[in-house]
Image (cartoon, rainbow over all chains, first blue to last red):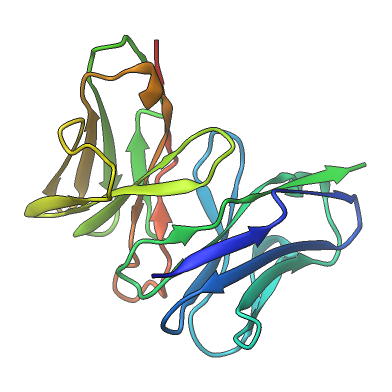
Length: 113
Length: 117
């Protein structure tokens, strides 16, 4: 079975500072990895995904993540935080395109002016 | 891209009544739909998987008789919370797995905030 661990339930950064949200996964087979963002009382919006190929994945709104198999990690980064980035972020894993996503517990990102 | 329309977005019901939540795939056919529940400040937990033309598969600990899932057609999946109680108050979200050629993009509904009073 696969699982996801997000280190840090709450991360606070200053506007313009680097954003780093950590995600480690456990999977018996090569995983498909995802980062989603959720604003209050809304559904999930896909930021980026890794399936195969290039390990550095670029997503929307300036976010990117790097798949590191040796570290079983898929950390999310953004060079410069914006106030609008304040939200809940979820890392998720699936075994294939037909299996349900397994989510981490989420990390709440706060951006301080 | 693929869109899943989920309704209602918010519902308040009295304890003991039933509530139906609908998820429709608007521009593609979804033979499978995943249903998640999210309690405040918590992650999404898979409740069940619905499949068009067959019975839903429930996760351990989810009451089948309480959370009725029906996948009536290739574009409609419904979740009915029967005899709702305050502890069923939660955020319910549906998700369709990637359709052919979609490049592994899971599509989520916008969620339903259920409050049982």
